[in-house]
Amino acid sequence: MKTRSANKDKVNVITLGCSKNLVDSENIVTQLKGNEIEVTHEENGSDANVVIVNTCGFIDLAKEESINTILEYAEVKKQGGIEKLYVTGCLSQRYKDQLEEEIPEVDAYFGTMELPALLEKFEADYKHELIGQRKITTLPHYAYLKISEGCNRTCSFCAIPLMRGKHISRSIEDLVLEAKNLAKQGVKELMLIAQELTYYGLDLYKERALPKLLNALADVEGIEWIRLHYAYPSKFPLEIFDVMAARKEICNYLDIPLQHANNDVLNRMRRQITQEETRALIAEARKRVPGIAIRTTFLVGYPGETEAEFQDLCDFVADMKFERVGVFKYSHEENTIAFDVEDDVSAEDKQDRSNRLMEVQQHISLEKNEALVGKKLKVLFDRKEGGHFIGRTEFDSPEVDNEVLLDADNNYVRLGDFAEVEIIEATEYDLFAKLINE
Image: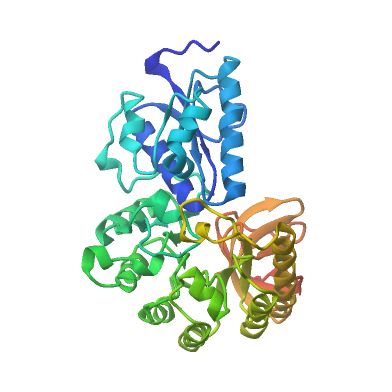
């Protein structure tokens, strides 16, 4: 049994789920450190006596992973390996009552907006002066910047509003301050994230203010790349493309989940957009920002999705030739609008459709990558793995997109630095390069 006193807690924070959860965990770490509490993030072999699990509750697989992680640490607590176990995040927000009943070994459960209450368990105060001084847990040269919380959309399949609430924007001033502090820590690349990026500012400024925010962030000294994640296509503010084209700091990259392309499915999903409007938006993006890389995700197996509707999606993807595509299988989520409709596409069909759609994209990705052979690109190098330095172009986000591999035997770069390379070989999802010696 560990015998730390209440004043000498050591905390290990475990993060599950998306980058937005990671930012929340980084804020937990920052507040605990600001209260002079020893804290680590996902430390292997940690001797912490307190564990905080920051959960995800988005889809079935994420919920299962979160529950298994809670149970794992509950068992560690039973065996005397830790003294306290706290659970926070989306799963805890959504299923708090059930979790308290089914896993009573947890000392307390907290929702997504209850950081001050969590800190009280350590007799710690929420320090407002620490806002914008987040301790990052990513590689030191990039960080996620969450510009808002919650979502006002009513997509029929999505449980995010149940877990994160209504849209709340952060002020431009607070975000610029945080960006400056991150730059002082050595951050060169900011990934802007939100549940709904393009809604930014409507609550604070009574207008879609993302273009103004982008200009303000692009002025921050030390920030060389700004990347946009999770933009909603309906009523997209086209001025974003103008800022992207005008400011070299803003990557020619847009993550814009489209979810589907068949109009009947889009209507049932309550996406507030048609395939024709989507095509027009993508055409406008490519017109205003030549060479833009568009990343999107699609949801297959939505209730009632027919083979013909799915084929319409495949044809759309084949025609649009997106640079990056991800595919999710529909998960039937309690209390969503779609939950009242029969989940009538079998698990086998969902998997089959996911595989078939990715096969369509695989050919597109190979074609686009092969077209880059002989091209010169600016690359930010993240890590060394095996015999290669591994980096990314402005068209690639960490962990989800393509990577550039540089032979470490014949080239040398410093991690966290930019370098000019020439692409010499391509596969579906990787580019091989050589260093351009100036």
